[in-house]
Image (cartoon, rainbow over all chains, first blue to last red):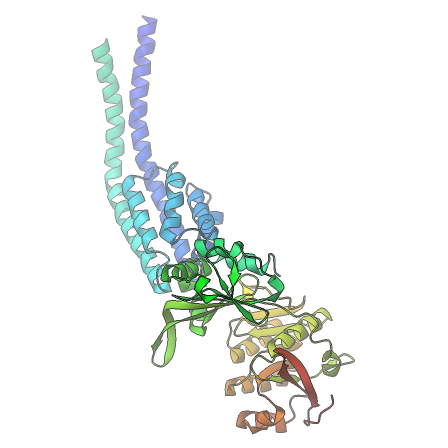
Length: 173
Length: 312
């Protein structure tokens, strides 16, 4: 009987945990997208006001950023300084996969970043600012969509986790 | 200050293929003057005044048939590295036709110039690169220093020479020596030739009491320095516009000593220029150092006082 009770608690806790993890992932994605946008905004300021080169702007961002994106910014800055990649996009690609592995960003977010990287380093300062504005605009739309859905999805995830735990208990008992 | 050899610094900004080729060739770095890249043309190195072609195996040759020819993509790749993938950050330098590298080496640019209302806006199809290696000549001002520094008093000095006569080299060494002797010096380095700043840091030794305004128009720069940095001596290269002459009056009126350079082959040629005639008659400059190019090197030909009388 004791073993059955312990098993039931374990099933209930793990199913609820999965529900909570799902909700947490969504919340973390939103938080990280916000963090990334804030950094891109500062990079924009760096380029607009100081006309910083891309390695400088990303090195500054790496120093400033204490969060999930520090490896990405540092990696880009180092890849650019190495002078072995033919374009900014190539340098970005060389570090993105590893640097973004620990984040909660989805494929859609990574594709947006890759498109953004394709635009950077081309032509004049206005083009850089336009590229940065484009990314800020696109990510804002993604964020708005996510935030609107988030509350419902988080609640749904938690409820489904608990309910599926109860369902499994009923079936198993 | 130079951290690594000029060849290392320059090889780092070349395309990966050219970098490998150049690293394989043995060159006396002290004699290295220029490296020229032109789309469809051989890589040319000028060493002690002699032209050499680079072969694909990284050897130097005088045989044109053995020379490696640069392609468009290699120049494009090299430009990416020179500009740190950020040509937009060097718009002003591109407008002036050159970029400064770490170590003070300069890259001259050639291509299709974009202009708007008669002003140069930028450059596209950059197909010609001339990398000129910096060689600071410390001590070249030793012989003129006693004439412009009497006891503790510094004379307003004008260095006069034709292009390539060594006036910037002499000015740089004067700045270095006076700065290290206790004078606060402000340098307006419009073409980044005196201090050759890279990311704001002078790559040439310009002394311990020298402040530099890099890539700043001379007239505005002189006023800015006087207001903000309180220099005892102002140093500027290639004065030539009316605004520059007005700024000279302003600087002298503020009590600053001035060391400047100007393009002219002789004192008489300077007198013939309307803009300068007035300055010469007003005896604003107390010393004129006239240089000449002898055997490819700038030498002091004569030194004159404020009245134009030869004193050396």
